[in-house]
Image 1 (cartoon, rainbow, N blue to C red):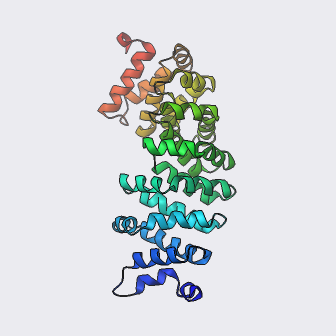
Image 2 (image 1 turned 90 degrees about the vertical axis):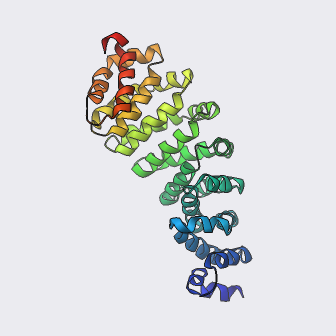
Image 3 (image 1 turned 45 degrees about the horizontal axis):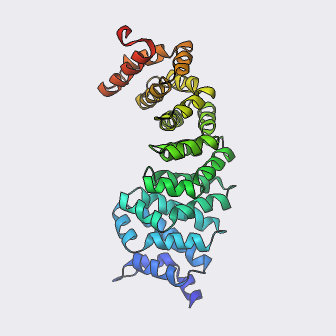
Length: 316
């Protein structure tokens, strides 16, 4: 029976008339949990469906999340199942908040982190796993689960393993920033695990990549929100220079400039930060942004606030 099901291929059910292909595919995956071949084909089929926005709610309602996570749990050594599973969870997690909750409740976060640990050498899997983790947060419950499951440590392993991949570095910066967002415990854990340095290394290595600079600045901002210890550590690691350098090298990119200003505002809460930023002429970078076409009315307000902190409210 299993051989017949395998030879027919799970995805072939999509060509049958009068049946629900999603329900059939999920049913076959549930019936043959031990078959790596069927689980591989099943994940491949679910992946294709998960890329179609209209199919995402149907896929979640039919048990696609559970089938994917079960396949990943039962076939940890199968890199194809793991990578396809991460993509499915990313696609469904991106669709709505209820899907994020569903994935977390079925231990999908733990499955993704385990896949990263088992297949550290696989660059494409690391990318898709980091991407999946990134879209599942910020969400307080998921942030807690991810940290408790070793997600911070595993993200940093992926970043350190593939330093020359701009996509991995970008997504890693996004994920770490999301983990730290309004979460003091995660801010501290990321700092203790040398995560601040990993973000700054990404920004130094990929200075010309807009996305890395934008999300690196955003991560630094989230690390240091209402956290004087984190601010001091970022300054110690020369984070002030990294932020101003991003502004200097991406003058026309409003998103980079905006996130850099948010990061600078936090660093300026420290007396050391003000001294460092004045020494590297941050005023010029912020003033340039405030006067540029890249700044909208909201960004001009932020830039002027930062200028006021740098040189005094009466001297803007």
